[in-house]
Length: 344
Image (cartoon, rainbow, N blue to C red; front, side, top):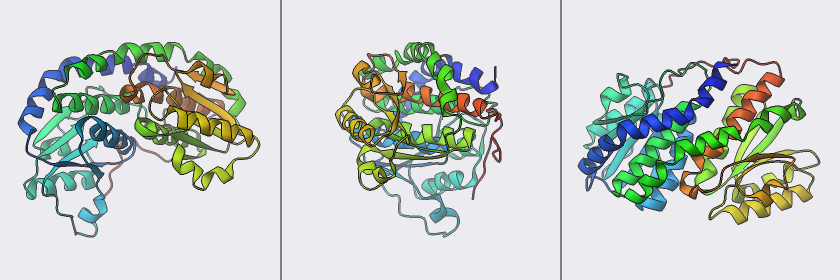
């Protein structure tokens, strides 16, 4: 078994540990942050940037906060940081090492903003530079491609969202996620058993919307990292604005489609691209939707839409890992990548 496979299957315990260890801490820091900011600026790279996309929908829908993604080169290369007055400056980084991420937090402090780092490294430069730190408890992640640190980052953001509103109902829903992750992993043996069909795939599109726009980006990233396949993420709305012209017979389209507010839009797109000859790989908790798929990747029912990104990414992780193995690649050490990437 690869290290990546082991780390993928550690995710229920990681999220459970995060919630058990950090709920009280997050409640305290949220109380201290209350009334100190009007909007949120998030800085992140790689998989953490995809977690930030989740935060845009999460904080927007449930905390009614405007969320923007920082552009680190303005801080480090152009030396023209924007005015951050009124912002909570939030960094998401597994390693907490990248200088450009640290610099955005440092500039936020210089401008008098509250700062919060979400990392897997409490002693990292980023954690030490921030006023507040939230440890994601992912443990050591040895495989180069992020898996458990990504879902733990999502869990940390979800925990923060519930605490900012003091929302006990949503916190109870969040505590059901580790068991939902377990059920998801148990139901995905079909992904590994049928991945050989896609061994010679050279390109594909991954589509999600709403809360799972982030999932489309993260699944696409895993496929690119692990299999060297040209993979593009889109929202179902953006895909209709031009990229749908790529679809022809056998073109692989991965659809992230759990039930929720955007489900009907994604289901409609599935019908449209299938009529154009697309090969459909569908991640969903809807049986009718799964019946349309050439490769069905089922999710357990019962989770509210805001939490589905914590389970919807799992089929993508397993698919990318299994496809790498089918292509004769090492899923633990993708070509050209390092575990910690530092950018300026």
